[in-house]
Picture 1 (tube, helix red, strand yellow):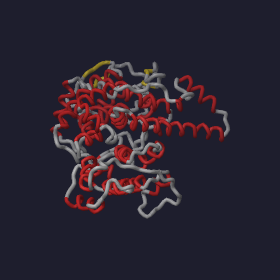
Picture 2: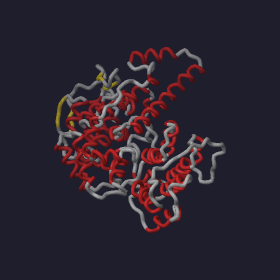
Picture 3: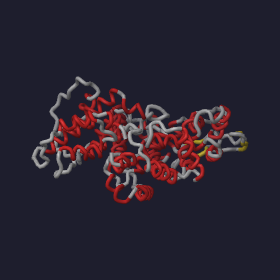
Picture 4: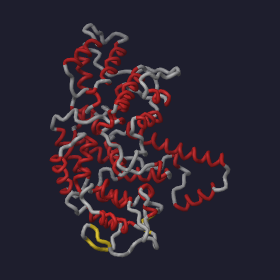
Amino acid sequence: MKKSNLWSLRLGFSGNEAKIIEKIGLEKFLKRSYDSKFDTQLPAFLQGHPQTLLQMKEFRESIKNLDKEEKKKIQREEIYAIGELKKWWIAKMNTDEFPLREKMVCFWHNHFVSTSQKVKINYWIYQHNMILRENAFGNFRELTKKMVKSNAMIKYLDNVDNKKGKINENLSRELLELFTIGIGNYTEEDIKNGARALAGLTYGDEGGVYKKGTEDNSDKTYFGKTGNWKSDDLVDIIFEQKNIPYLITGKILKWFLYDNPSEKMVKYYGDYFRKVNFEIAPLLTKIFTEEYAKDISGNKIKDPLVYIFQLIDELQLKDYDETMIAFFLKQQGMDLYNQVNVKGWDGGNSWLTSQVYLQRNNTSDMLCSGKKLSKRVINSMSNENSKPKVELEKREVNIEFDANGNNKTIIAELSNRLLFNVNESIQKDMENLLKYDFDPKNTNANYAVVRLFNYITKLPEYQLI
């Protein structure tokens, strides 16, 4: 696989950025990604939704006396809004000129998990997502402070129930175990005292605020330091600990490059992360530029986002349906805004179970044949013997290839773009599909190349980057 195609998949969601990486080089691509602008305007589908605590209170009062059908209608509108939120984000992922920001937002979304299913308030989910976007390449310590005080996180990890004399440890525990330092690097006393420091942190219009009467203003000892600590103090103390860089550095390496990064590599980049005071952009630049110089293809299984967007890009589909993409992702175990638990998606081998692999193959069959996806079609993909019982609208699909080439040059072209490795058996199969007398100028040439592409997408080698 050409290096530009490989890194386009790693730093984005498809091969769409390969040409610009070739043209301007990796470092300029990274710089432009860090400097990329993004829309901060509230999406239209959230206009009219309550945003302040007062508006939320008034809204709850207004629906108290509604009849059953009217309440169901409002519930449907809330469900519709989270669907629109998924579509809004999917469109950003696939249309941004420099998609690394959205790739990083997705990383943070899976690190600082806060699901719509539990939070329920769509504006808070949007707020949470925008904090990640605004701070995607910023400072990890400062992002952690903002996440701890986000309304979505306070709701998701039950800190609204954490009060002086009646402690809830959820947020305190996950702050240490999953968000910053990792298991084995803290004590149960740290968790208890951290929870006391977070007691009384509850919802505010723009984020968490301490509520008088429920906060604990006594001294607490946290990692050996004693004082009347609050949420920002906890984060600052955590970031003084020697093992703080390694959990997040390992997760970044796993998200972008390796399903199983070595401890030596995690420590090497983690030590650098501490050196640059936990600034994310310098860490990413160092990781990507140093690993770019190596031949490291085939070390990571594509996640469902990369899989579906690469199909869309290669088949040049312009009228894809974000709703169906969201549903496909859910079926693949990557439901946006709704991870199964606070640990987030496992990644790695979980992206290639037998059911996921079957769904991927069937999806490729459908799209390569020119058929559009529907919920019924996607549901049927879990069953090898199930066929959709509806006539499906068909459309033209096209694969980019050199119309002046021959079968071997076109096979090489697709291999360089799509596969990290081609053995003798795969090469022979591809030459049987695109035979020696293949005429690229024939009116049916595109169909033959699409068939070749469909074969390639079924290969285990295609699932890896």
